[in-house]
Image (cartoon, rainbow, N blue to C red; front, side, top):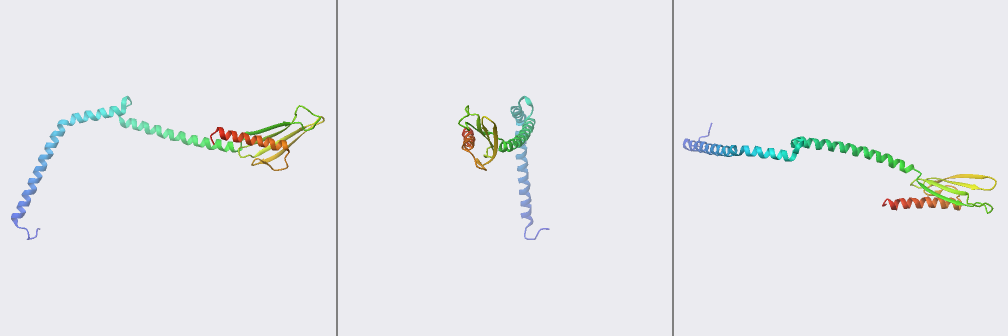
Length: 180
């Protein structure tokens, strides 16, 4: 119950006002519904046109969105596979002996035709080997020396140093050609 501060006349007036307000809201709701129901077929037609525009001949928009999402997942999978292959190739490139320097020379004055040579086979870090083949009229000797960071780890001849230098130049040319 209500407190005695409100008179019965006031309570009756409030109740009547609430009823009138509810009736007005109901009338407005009915009017809005009638207007909307008159335009409802046009709205449904508009929504169908919208779906046709988005879906085209491939179906409704929701079907097209599902197809796009499936294609996106497939592209992400291909991207992951490509990243894995790139990582493998980068690992191979670190050990690949792609830098080559080759110097021919006459080891002795009595031999011609520059049959002696120094051959540097290095990876992109300048690690690898330099081979030196010295030709003479009586025999041929071949020596191999380790190279780290474009520097021979033991005493190197002028020809071996030149071969390593040529290999290093080929690395610089590769970097320039690749834009780096």
